[in-house]
Length: 165
Image (tube, rainbow, N blue to C red; front, side, top):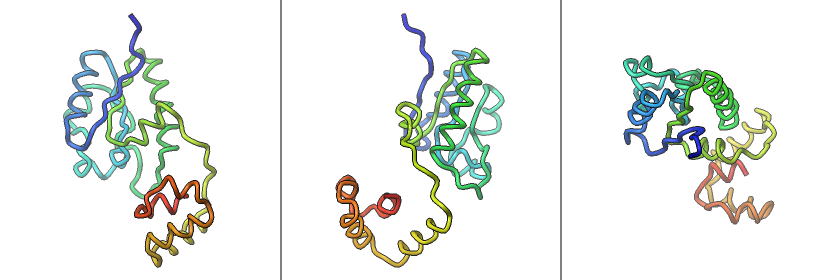
């Protein structure tokens, strides 16, 4: 029989993922590795249903509350951190148990991410200013003119993805 190399526990907020991951980690000698984009932030324990202080010492936990709220954290940074946590778990002989509700993180873990260069802060500010003054339909129309193939994959009512494109 093939040995399990990792377990992925995914689902919506407050659906019991953390409790399941805790049970699995205790039973299988695992380590809980966060895969939730909000639970990475140090100051958001209660708002994100992050494992409580009583549960955290029961099994090793990684990538929970390790980022300051002022940091611009991304899926790319999470993947780099998760790769380190995965390697550490394997070196320690522990089963990695990824737990969270961020689909992009699970996709990054299982399929990787496209290489996207960092966007300079002045360019980000310019785009944010444009978005603040234009309805999503106008942004979508502009994207259609410049990159119709990308626009066709997006919803006209999704300004966040339109701006990223």
